[in-house]
Length: 193
Image (cartoon, helix red, strand yellow):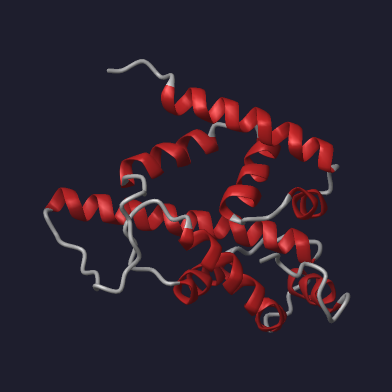
């Protein structure tokens, strides 16, 4: 399922983002109401590929990401696609924070409650692996990091990423290849301690 980055009403989201940047406190709420369904698709996609057992649901992830976005006093989203790139990054941060919380609880011996209806996690990464991946992503060059966030955490395709970041699809492909190679070396070729 593809995000509707150019869905109606055309220009309304961009206008509201500018109003929010100019200090209109209600503008961000109106933006969220216009793009909520797309944010929910983004969150569902992300949680489908989530690496570790997580009690978070798509709605919770959208709400947590929203709280991160509204707390950011300097949200500089220029248009709808740029907003989705920023939202993908916020969702990544929420999931990494959740992984850190789970790791801290594990160290203390606390238990995380899950239900029998939770997803099958047999193919996932450990919390430590997710945190190592996050650290490796943070070490990438800024544009490569944004491409990875949009592609991996946002589930965006090359065209959507190019639009969101204001670069060509060819640059997206090149950055994606470089970033994947660098991440692989950082995660798997590191000398064992």
